[in-house]
Length: 228
Image (cartoon, rainbow, N blue to C red; front, top):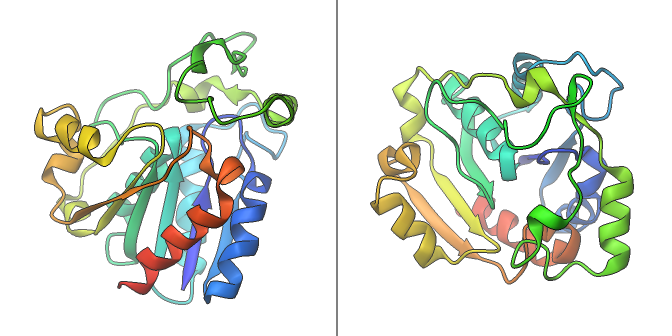
């Protein structure tokens, strides 16, 4: 089965290289995506452009596929469920949650000269980055691609209630499945509160398990696909 891999802010498709290498022997075809504006040199890309790129990959799959979103890109994976519910076998969300309709995509950090650059490691100190050594931090920061403002500030539009029928796997890195369930139960994640099938997978990592636990993450994703 095709497993589409969408990295979060500042990341291109190469961040999935080691996960992809571990997925192939497990019988699945990894499809890492490099999003418009986050690897193709276009600082004018919009959120709609990124959604279109994800949908193109979904449409190109030979059958139903699993769409994996990391961090902010959990929203892109969920938008794929909204736009193509009949084409998705499952959505896997790593370290993030989709907002409700009408919310901004990822207006988290300062925008300068039309882009949102990587803000450095200070905002991520603690559980997010605790398992990243200095080499990994340096490599991630050096490779970080500023996110176009029209992506970060794009407005999320959700319309098809069939998205709630798509099974969801929530991969929990810097937080526990129990804490995630608490947030859902408290109404903090209304989209997942309405989803009919939500499973949880714990992974002992910080916010970037594709960097620090790629083999374990690949096994989790493969098991999710195999369970369909």
